[in-house]
Image (cartoon, rainbow, N blue to C red; front, side):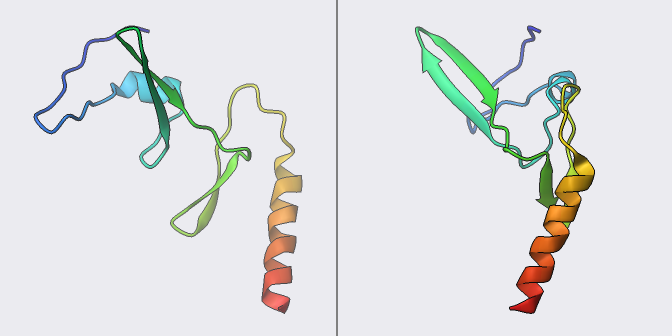
Length: 87
């Protein structure tokens, strides 16, 4: 995908909605920026787990190729919370 965007007066750029959606990016996600030979590359920084906490709630972020056992992850998080409460 190639698209044209403009740098605003404070140095920010806006990523097009279609790019955000195709990369499953949401506000708060981290992006790695690298510059070399006159080019800038942006890469999403992915967490090791598809479960992320947003506003105190665990949210599952899926990718089309994910083979993670969601129920096992939920059980693991529940067990961790129980252990924390028992302390």
